Image (cartoon, rainbow, N blue to C red; front, side, top):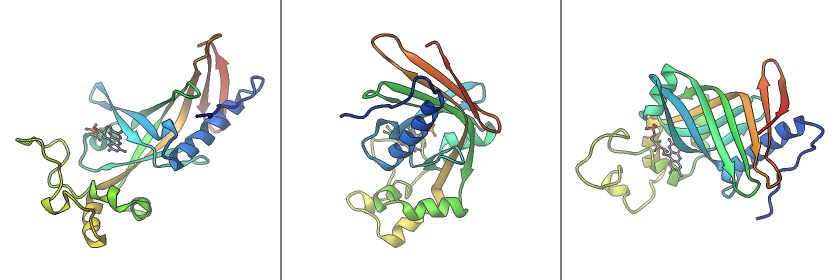
Amino acid sequence: MSREFQFNPTNVNTILDESWRQLKEAAESETHPWRLGNLATLSEDRPRVRSVVLRDVQTEARELICYTDQRSDKVNEIKASPRVEWMAYDSVTRVQIRLRGVASIHTNDARSEQHWRESSPEHRRGYITISAPGTKVESAVPNLPDYLFDRLPNDEEAQLGYENFAVIVCRIDYLDWLQLRRNGHLAAQFLWTDKWEGHWKYA
Ligand SMILES: Cc1cc2nc3c(=O)[nH]c(=O)nc-3n(C[C@H](O)[C@H](O)[C@H](O)COP(=O)(O)O)c2cc1C
């Protein structure tokens, strides 16, 4: 794997640009490790974190997008307290990014419809569940109707999943960048007010 994180050490903004470029690439590629993010929320006064797949990036709007079941805990947590943090690490470039922002939940609206249209039958099957995620069950069985254990849903069946489908849009206002290096780590941070402003910092 030859991926590099390219930047100009005399221009901190090249870190910001390359971070968003690689995030976009990650959303479009099965192999970029930033495709798998860790999304942290607040649950009352405790942090909660889980893996999520980065499905889309809107650079101009500063948005990171993932999909979920609207009955999942994270949806209620975001509704109660929308500040989130998203973290990803690339072991090839040895770059960690942490992005903070405000999340919103989209169900049954133009945005959720657009993403549902773009999703695959395999992905849609994950939403045609018997019970809400997290429901107690007596044995180790998948949360799927019997008829979908060994096949993908047809178009009509897949549509049943739409009512559980939610799009989480995280609008980012802070980006923290860290690259591990043998001769000393490098770090930078960026804050959005009405534009991005950033600086290098000691790691
Ligand atoms: C590799 C991997 C990718 C995952 N991607 C997603 C995802 O994109 N959306 C999602 O809701 N859950 C995803 N999950 C499951 C979550 O990590 C989590 O277990 C589940 O959503 C319940 O989280 P909650 O109870 O905090 O809502 C993924 C899990 C793994 C291991």
